[in-house]
Amino acid sequence: MPLSTRPPKEPALVPAEIQARLERAGLRRTLATRAVLGLFLANPQGTLSHAQALASLTARGLDINRVTLYRLLDRLAACGVLQRHANDDARTWRYGLADTDEGLAPRFECDACHRQFRLTEASEPTRAVASDLFRTLASLGHQGQRVDLSIHGTCANCVPQEPSA
Amino acid sequence: MPLSTRPPKEPALVPAEIQARLERAGLRRTLATRAVLGLFLANPQGTLSHAQALASLTARGLDINRVTLYRLLDRLAACGVLQRHANDDARTWRYGLADTDEGLAPRFECDACHRQFRLTEASEPTRAVASDLFRTLASLGHQGQRVDLSIHGTCANCVPQEPSA
DNA sequence: GATATTAACGCAACTTTGTTGCAATAATGG
DNA sequence: CCATTATTGCAACAAAGTTGCGTTAATATC
Image 1 (spheres, rainbow over the protein chains, first blue to last red):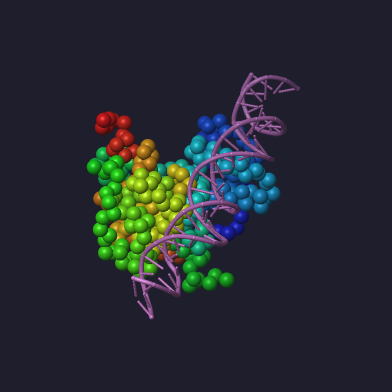
Image 2 (tube, rainbow over the protein chains, first blue to last red):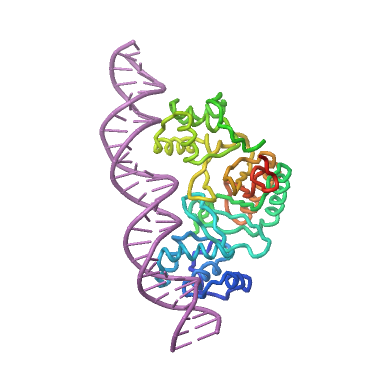
């Protein structure tokens, strides 16, 4: 069941990899940091906008200032825990857990409900294309560094054929 | 020589495909429309932000209102002549000629000079991945509609090893 | 060619999203 | 416990894009 609607569970254990990045960056363990991290860990393939994250936090009773959240998300992205990218449908940023392994998974966004998640099933071909592109770029004298693959469409929940009610 | 710095040439002939789309959408042939179209046709693989387009127009003596340009770019995107996508480095839109054929050309953006262009050379393996992704999505119950592939890196002009001066 | 219709334009005001300055607070190390 | 300094909250700011509305000018029709 992809794109679950249930709210993410409590903080959860912080994976060693992430813990290490936080420490290396000298980030403190504050209430906000743990809550936000918990948000992303509860749905590792999903992405959240600042507004969505704020709403989730508020919904669970955490009264985090909007500026604080902006800065926290920035910080987490800066130290490599989160990955930030532009939302293609609005002038906003979207954040998701950074790939800890080599996994370069394409992002899928539903144009109806605007939820996003990573397509880990397709990370293999994506990797292949990435290296192909890097080769092509190199032959032209350019230097490729980061490949970003995203697919827009309609998710299972929003496909008209499937009433699901 | 990719990413030429020279200003695009004059209006140029409007390809039939584009002309058809303009007419189908009932767009009028105004000074602004022709000028903007000329901008993109002069560098078919490149993309322009609103600000860049406005600067180019102003530079060649055309005093187009900024709101008018916003609306014109929207209109051209709406009727399928241009393609709009979010700029990954700033909260802005970027416009480029829409692919007329089936080709899904990845976009390359130089993180140093922020110029962008389409990598037409790499469209073959990319095309394969697109249909592959659609299959994967379908098997999960989702419906893929549009694939967007972008690469960030450093372009030949900005690679430190190559002085080029 | 004159006239009516309406897309396109220009201006000003507004909205959304994100950022900055700064004083107050609270993790963390000793 | 105390000092240090990352983090927070507030308010004010800034950039990019949008909306309302009266005016201009393509296009169609006579």
